Image 1 (cartoon, helix red, strand yellow):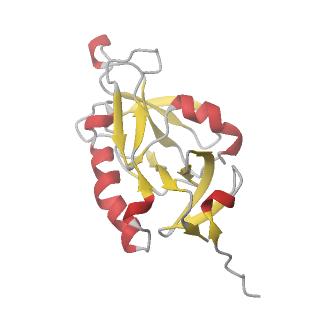
Image 2 (tube, rainbow, N blue to C red):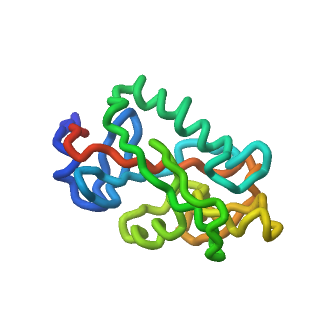
Length: 180
C-alpha cells in the first residue's frame, strides 16, 4: 500500500507535529512571528561537540559543521536557503553564568531551558544528544563539560570532545514554506 505524501504550509502544523524538509524529519516546537522553531525528530549522526574539547557553542566545531556542511546538505536535498531564519541561542551555563553570551545561527542545538519548555513535544531519541548549554564556564574550571540529553529524555553532561554525542539540530524556518 502506497503512502500519500501530503504537502502544506508549515504554519498549519500544530506543535509536536512532524514534517520532512531538506531530507530531514523535524518536529514543530513553536510558532512565533512568522517563524517556526523545529528540532530534528531524532539524532541524525554522532560527532564531538568540539574537537578542542571546549564547551562554548559559539566557537565549537559542531557549530561550524551545522552552519556549513550540514546546512549545505539540507539545501542539496531541496531546502530553500532563504527559509532558514537566523535565531539567537542563549549560551547561559546550567549554573546560570552568562560568560558565553548568545550566538546567532541558522542551525543550532537546543538549550536546556528550551528543552524543558518544549519537552512535551520532543520525542525521546534513539541515542543521547548534545544541547548548546555548557555545564559551567571556563573561568570556573569547566571548559569541557556540555549538557546532553539521554535517549530516555533525562539530562546529564558529557565531555565536549566525545565523538559519540548525538547531533539533533534545531532551526527556525519561515512558517509560510511548504513541507511534506
